[in-house]
Every structure is written in structure tokens, then in C-alpha cells.
Image 1 (cartoon, rainbow, N blue to C red):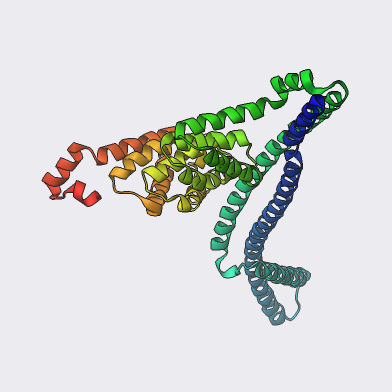
Image 2: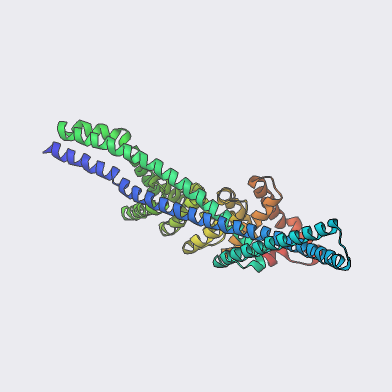
Length: 399
């Protein structure tokens, strides 16, 4: 009876460890489908931009052909007038006249073909929502869309690669688990179960349990609260493609920083999704999230929007979210002294970092320059000079 119970325990353990593989496969399929859709969008955008380039070039060629045709027709008229005014035209004049007429005819045919091609391209561009009267504006828009879509494609490709690597580990675990379960059923699970539990098979699971225990002690959480956290993390693994351990580390950062369980549960979805989209570390994104919540007073229910603003700012500029995750915590503390908070504070600081990077060699230098600027703006010397020279109470104005 004891062996049967222990065997059942091992089989249950195997099922718990390998069960996520099915969900992971479904997630992998969704990622591949999303990757294909993004690639299709990128191809369409690139095609539309190529059409704009082709239309612009052909329009210029058509204009030049029209000028050459006008010039050639003038030559034909001049030679025709000379030919008519001569009683006995020379062979040379006759040859020049015929050659001029032939060149004019060729140029007219060439111009007609170019006009026809322009009309065809204009129709294709119109179907794509592009008006030929303002091609430069559409070209700039397409360039931005291509950059954003290319960045999204890279993020999705990296996520799929990581996911496939995780799938490979799951399959290896499943194969190992089946062998262990079979042996347990034959020889009895007493000693074998202990070996399995102490071996590599549940190393990650053991680490995860230790992580939750550490979080529970730090926050003084009850068993019921730990269960809520576990359920939230399990729920997010499918939509963020992050492991329980990685998401657990993010939760640990938030709780260790001072957030309560409710705030942590509210912030985790935005953190996990942002880390996946920006290919950033969950712990660094969690620190950024805490700085937004603590320094810029962003409510957890609005954290997703704030993260989207930073992600978009990173895509449009060169100071990416992974850089912001590294430098934002210290910068937001200084920005708070300037009265920056809420969504407006997030947008202002994100844009300021993009501007700072234009005059810096790399994000680290840009962040340092921004840090120095914020420090000087609120320094006692600046406050005194503002009062003495301009009569401005800077501290009051910044509140």
C-alpha cells in the first residue's frame, strides 16, 4: 500500500512538472502566428514605400522627358519652317528634318508610356491610402512604421527563440520523467522518489518554492495570500512567455521595495508584458515600475499605459526601455523634486531622455547628463540665482 501511494505521488509530480509543456506548445504556436502576421505587415509597409520611391523617380523622369519632347518639337518646327522656305531643300536638311521628327515621335511614345505607368502606380498608392500630392509626408510615416514593425519583429523573434528553448527543456524533462515514473512503478517509489526529489528533476520547482517562501516572509503573507500570488504568476506565464521563477523575482523586487500584495498583483501583468515586448529583464522593469508608482505616483491600474508610453518613446528614439529600466529609478526621484508626476511626468521624462541622447555618445552618458541637469535645476545656487536675478521663487513654481 505504501509503495502504491508513493508511486502515485511520483506520477502526480511528473504530471505537474511536464503539464506546462502543452500550454507552452500552444503559446509557441500563437507566437509563430503573430510573427508571421508581423512579417506580412512589414512586407506590405516596405512594398508601399518602394512604390513611393518608384513613383517619385518615374515622375521626375516623365518631367525630364516632357522637357526634352518640347525642345525636340521646337526643333522640328524650326526645321519645317526652313524646309518650306527652301525651293530645293538639300539632302542634309531633309535628313535633319526626318531625324528630328523621328526623335520627337520616340520621345512622345516614351512620355506616354511613363504617364501610363504613373497612373497605374498612382492607383496602387491610392488603394494603400497614400495620396500622391503629399508623398514626403507618407514616406516619413512609412519609415517610422517600418522601424516600429521591424523592432516588434525582432522582439517577437527573440521571444519565440527563448520559448522554443524552454520547450526543448520541457521535452527533455518529460522524457526523463517518463523513465522515472516507469521505474517507480516497477521497483516501488520509496528510494527512487527520494532520489528524484533530491536530483535535478525538480531543481527549478524547489527554487520557486524557496523564492515564494522568501517573499512570504518579507511581506508577512498568509497562506491564502501566497496562493493568490502563485495563481497570478501561473496565469501570467502563458501571456508573457516568462517562467514562474522570473516573474517571481519581479514580484520579490516589488514587495521588497515596499509594495503590498494588492499593488504587486496589479503591477505584475504590465511588468511581465512590457519585459517581453521590450526584451528587457523582468527585475529591471519591476524596479522601473516601482519608481513610477512611488516617485511619479502612477496608480497600478494605469501602470500598463505608463509602460506603453515608455516603450513607444524607446521605439521612436534611441533611448530604449531596457536603458530606461536601468536609469529610471534614480532619475524619477530627482524628477519628483521638479513636480513631475503622473502620465505627464512619464511622457516628459521619456522625451527628455531621447533629447539628451542626441548630444551623448550612449544611454549611460545621456542618463548622467540628465541626472546632472535635474540636480542643478533644484540646487540651492540655482534657486538663489533665480530669486536674485529674475525674482522667481523656483521652489514654489516647481510644486
